[in-house]
Each structure stands twice: as C-alpha cells, then as structure tokens.
Image (cartoon, rainbow, N blue to C red; front, top):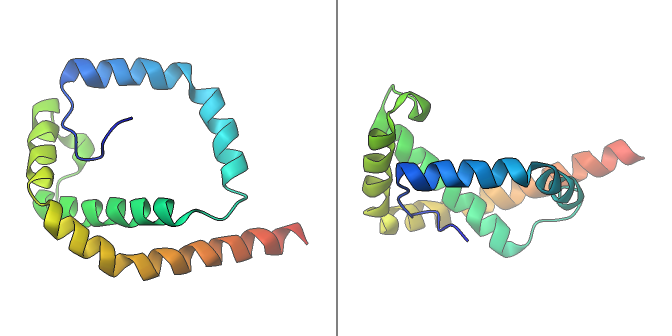
Length: 115
C-alpha cells in the first residue's frame, strides 16, 4: 500500500494512474458501502493527518495550487512535507477532535435522511 509520505516518481505516478482506472468501479462500490458505516479510529486518524498535510501544503504553496505545479514541483513539495513529519503529527493530534465531530455530524445527517 502507498505510504502518504512516499515521494512518487513520474513512472510510479503513471503506473498508479493506470491501476486506479482499472479498479475505479470496484472502489466506487466499496466507498458507497463504507460511507454508510462509522469510520474506524484509524481512519479518523488518517483523515486528520491528511488535513494536517493540506494545511502545511497551503502554507508552503501560499497562493499557488498543487495542481498547477509540475511533476518535479510536486516531488519537491512531497519531500518538504516528508521532512515535517513531527509538525504534521502535532497538527493532526489537534485536529482529531474536529474530525471526530465532523464524522458524527455526517452520520447524523445521513441517518436523518433515511427516516
């Protein structure tokens, strides 16, 4: 499985793109099923780490978008983020209660629709 902090080369990105296109329907089905269930603590922790990475990414990029960067630019961005693992972990820990609250609200809204 892909590590969030792993830096991908151009070839690896292309290979991953092909694999994801092949598995798109299977992933969509599993996602639809999992959206109806409460996320596990590990998933919530992963979400908070992703949010922390996004916060740092915005700080590093300032006004630019990640999609505007070249592949080499994305690689250097990933390397910068990889060097800030401790900061990401600290921010993620602070974000965890917000992520948990958002998950309970999401489920309440979802279950409210069913009735």
